[in-house]
Structure formats: structure tokens, C-alpha cells
Length: 71
Image 1 (cartoon, rainbow, N blue to C red):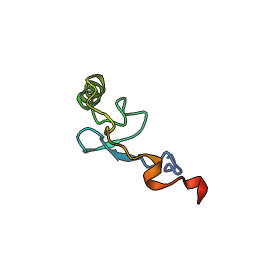
Image 2 (tube, rainbow, N blue to C red):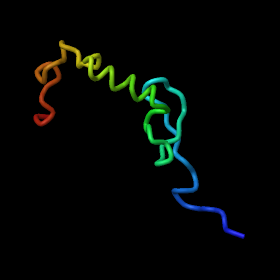
Image 3 (cartoon, helix red, strand yellow):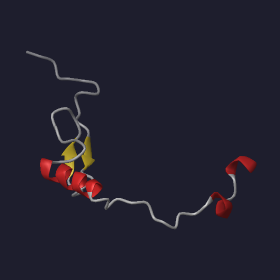
């Protein structure tokens, strides 16, 4: 009879899929990690390819917040 596993491998880490927010396993067992499926991984790749993910154009400058090195 084998002993129960203990340590970091005994509990699988679960994270939310960045695309659909469903809980999924984050381990080598999930080839799409951190996504839950090939569909969500493809949707995310498509959004990057179409440049849907962008930084806002009106980002604040250091002058508005002050230089942290001076404080």
C-alpha cells in the first residue's frame, strides 16, 4: 500500500482563466495553462494579434505624481 502524497505536488493549484474567469488547474496536466481550454487560449491570442490589448493613450507622467527618488 502506498503512502498518501505530501508536499507541493499533493494539491493542484487552481487559478481563474484570464479569458472566461472559470476555475482551472494550473499544472503540467493542463497544456493550456493559465487558460482553461484551447478556445480561451486562442481568443486571447486573437486579441493580442488584433491589438485589442492596449495601454491608455493618456497615461500620467512622472510630473503629475512627483519623482519617487526625490522623496
